Length: 360
Image (cartoon, rainbow, N blue to C red; front, side, top):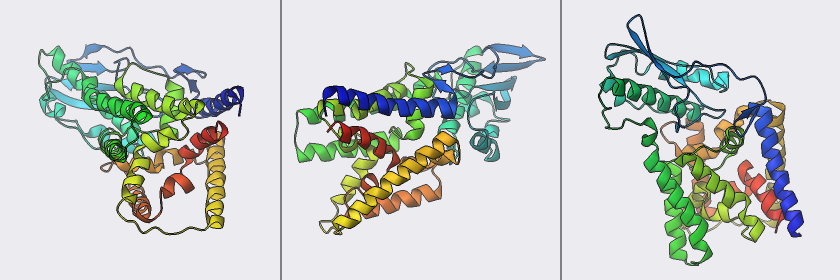
């Protein structure tokens, strides 16, 4: 394919993501194409002896799938009465799980110092929303402590700093996977990189590309934070590298799930032989599945499937049992079948492969 054709294909892939962002969230790079819900201006105020902290415009905090998840914290003296979410663009069906699981009542009745040391697990099926809510709750607690001239139990007055070390680690690992393999062709280094991908990008930071992350990025745009920078770097490797002949570089050198499957494959030399016809049938299945799932997103019918892509199994504490079991099955299969999920199922990998194959 000519260079012009490659660029046209890249624009086409981006057009798909733009359309999904507009259909699902009504936003593109932070600009809303529908009337946004009003939220109160962030401030510390005192109403009838109760201190009210609003995190609407606290910068650097993680966002949910559809945008910011601000909260209001109500504090009397040194004790939290409640921390409640403000209006946001998250899916009500999934955001409602935060209340159903008791997350929104986690800090009720606690002193500020006690609350500062509490970091509950994310809610299964609403991982990004709950992580954003938790981060906003910690921000409100920190602001209240700072207003009283004290610091949080973890000695951090900036809630965003809780995410900084992990974000920087993710950025470094992504850069390593993006750059070093261009100059170093060594099996030992490949294993080292894959271990880092699984440990740092997978289990520690939960940094990867899936439809939820990509749509969220296109909808909300880039923010000057470590997490957003890490996702931007991944997108660059996934979409830009193929233009320069580095097809599948993201899948092979950066993706934590791809790395986990490769590492599992080293555990046994015995492989299950899959016939050419079966491989062809499974490849067709992957493409049909992708078209169906993409159509569901466009039509808004059962579009919540993006909350359950297998990548979320890395968040062991918050992932549902179904996702964990599916992840375990994939790793077991990977011992005997090279990259089974990548080759025969992955919806995210399919859109990346469509772009990569086109520029091949």
